[in-house]
Image (cartoon, rainbow, N blue to C red; front, side, top):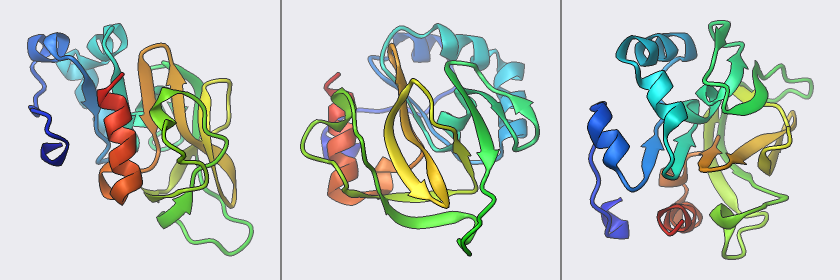
Length: 176
């Protein structure tokens, strides 16, 4: 974010999160343990109540969905879709790791001619296609590589690791 000229703070302090202009819900870890932590800290209810733009990344996106097969855990229920384990049928490797394209882009997050550009993925689970899908990717099957509902945005890929394309997506989020 420094390269984008934006001040940022990493915190789980509820007051600071509520007062932030934008919130990024990062994704590192495992679904069940992370949901348990969010509930223990009361962050599950806080995240769902936020009114400013929120961007979930990777596991952050998955936890914003209804349910995840990873740990058989209910998510925050912001997006009306399920998170499932890749079960490759064509010899693909799991986790899906590396560069892949994003297609059928919709909305403000993807302003700037980003159709069929490459972004960086590292994941074993995916969100099914749904009404909130704003980008698709194909790996073994088509799935939601980005979701959006109201002030909540999410990407399965890592924009922070996706070079100029990811930088444009983060700029678009900052400018919401």
